[in-house]
Length: 188
Image 1 (cartoon, rainbow, N blue to C red):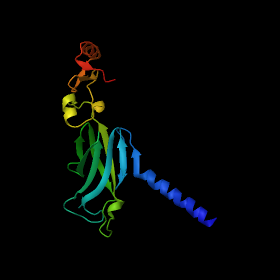
Image 2 (tube, helix red, strand yellow):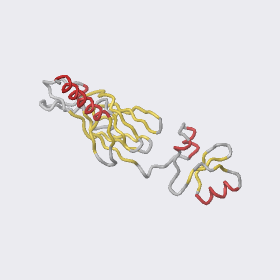
Image 3 (tube, one colour):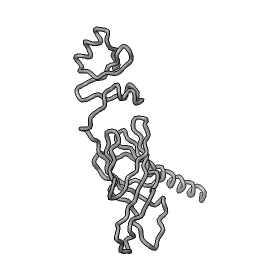
């Protein structure tokens, strides 16, 4: 019986640890992310890889420079990975594809008498989707390796595949005409 209870407790810790590893985030909300944790925002995945530097002035010391802290994140959007670095007080915001990622805070704040374990760091981020960002043409998206079905068109346009397998964005009415004339292939 004692082993069974220990087993249940162990399962509880395992499930709780797995729940911390990844979470979904809503738009325009600040959230925290721990070292080695992954979050999902819309179609963007962000993993907090590590803290690169923490030269911030300890809270119990008077300094002539406030210092800074830098973190390294891995972003994944439409199967394309990119590492980014955010730094407190400078370069705290990065635009990646159609998302803006902003470093709000990094805790714990240094104290002169304590060494911070790298796994203790928790970053507060803010992510927003830039809906006004200019969308690349469908051919450019295709050449960048984006799958045909994942190519995005501007508002009020639909995706069509030309006979030579090249994507194009056209109005719905134009799509029907082009398919009738044999210029394009219906993809939906």
